[in-house]
Length: 204
Image (cartoon, rainbow, N blue to C red; front, side, top):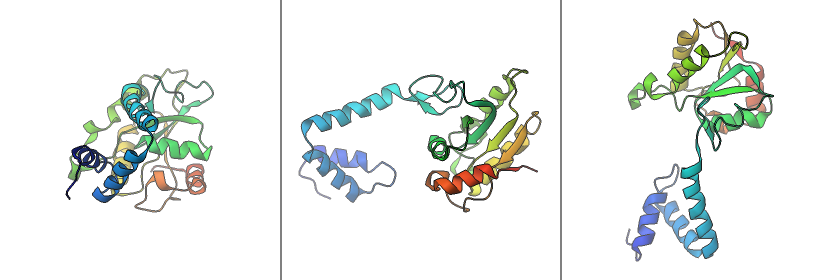
């Protein structure tokens, strides 16, 4: 593709690296940004810089946040005896939208995928173990919900975690099969996700 502007070519290349954005869509976005008022473009650029400078990961649950610990971990009204383990910060947002869960979270940062070179050391699994080992005896974690995507990688991660967490004195559950196999939590509708959480089942 021939561009008459090197700047548009560079911006198109950057935008095409975003998930789900191809070259043609990236080009349309670049030309759309070109037509925006200067103030909107500056605001967008400023927000992107702030995103990198301000947003970080919670030291307790590894969710994205601007304050540490995050607002969920620091909320005294949350049930600290239940931890819901998810793959991605987007899964936290999906579950929070249901208004059916009032516990804490632990974000793994992905799932086990040997074909992609992702092993246990690449995820926040040890952080979860450390977290469970550091809880006070008078404030124990009574339940761990494994709410991972119902696909091959998510299933493998669930099995691995269930074996790893079994020695802890806590109930292990997984969200019920209200979600179709091969789908992602991020795209589940609120009613389906709420039912899956409510009907979670113990791990064998």
